[in-house]
Length: 132
Picture 1 (cartoon, one colour):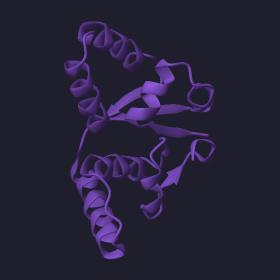
Picture 2: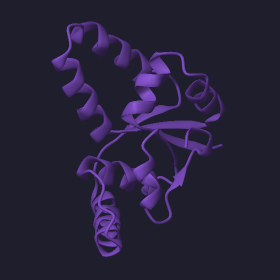
Picture 3: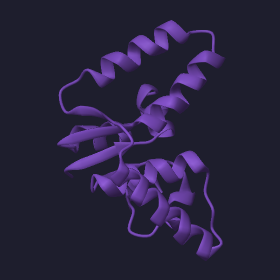
């Protein structure tokens, strides 16, 4: 496996020691995290009692070699538009943040590591099958 993009729920399960996520991370050449996943994590941190600790753990993760944060670009927006239109046409909407996350996965040709089954509706998106 070359590139993976880790979704919010997969990051949380990584912290919990989920072997499937740990294995996916170990096999990846490059690990991406979408800025939209960061937003979801930061929102969760603020709602919890250990915001400072959770931020420190996340910063250590993001500082590891081979890990990068993906910012939104015009190309990301093109993928977003394509995905959102296709899902609307198919009558299978997914949460807006997840459209952005899927756009980043397609843009970087990454396998998405997630436990959300609704991503299967995104045309062309590759999911880590072990988590489905």
